[in-house]
Image (cartoon, rainbow, N blue to C red):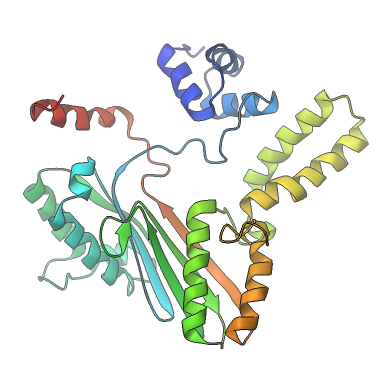
Length: 311
């Protein structure tokens, strides 16, 4: 039996916004399993937890850059936000982001690539920077997008310097239309992706595990309302289509730029101005630190601040 500690209850409360007693009961009912407790609270209507409630903070920067028909995004982590504001670190992120364009989303290939500024590989240069700056850091992940005809747009949110910030987005658009107008629309779509955080382009591309998790929650809610099984099943599928998919599927989301049309409608409207059909070929969204469990390492920043006499 897992001990339900005060820190565990607080963690669940921070993730869900539910009351302390409800969080304690949810953890008790689910033997301390955080994800199961989140689902339990959502089933009872006590939580509005985000679909990605297990995301935690990590420091560093996300670099995103595009060049015509291709683009790359890279996440480089550090222990504290001090490093993200360091010009030397930012210079390293910028150079590695440029190199990532040729790595085709292969992290091992990127790490083995030679830096432009010296003969060291990316991996060896990062290790050298650890010694220079005095803080652990690593190139965590990378991805690329490309199209045969069209553009790949890049956008960074919470910008720290050119092509780097806390969120990095790539959007690939296939089109033979006006490149300038296509580029502007691509940037707007990338801003939408940064804000709306879609999980997939279409329902077919959604992780089936994610769909089944939502289906299970909706099913329990429908049964708890007293609906007959056959009615409950129809309600569940309806909610998946009209509620869940509209929240997490890019083409079905409400376009944040105007707050009215769906993204699919926005693409169709843009095509008229661009002068040719437009297709979203893909997108990538990196948020700094998503999915990273830092554990007790979160105290490092406090230790630095204390040593500097600021805390």
